[in-house]
Image 1: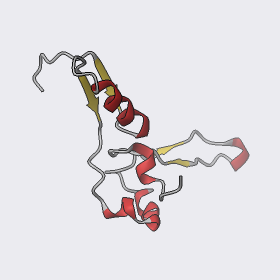
Image 2: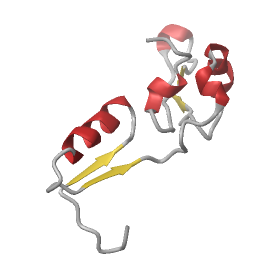
Image 3: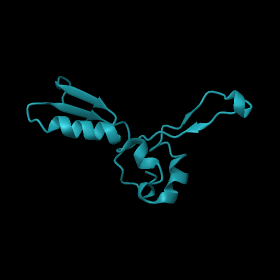
Length: 98
């Protein structure tokens, strides 16, 4: 991919929806599709073991580690909002809960 590459579609995020969308768009050989993912491939064994979710919840390589704004109903505490930073997106770090 060069600095002057041109694409018909640029999809940011290779989560469940982004990966499927890229696949379907690229089925037409006349379309140039670029799929961008910030995280690594989903090769970690923790992704394939349900209890791995406990480790992935704090793993900055696979999780964006977002937190909420302080919540008044929780006495000002913030809540962890795990979001996947890996091929497969948040579906890859959800402890195999579908």
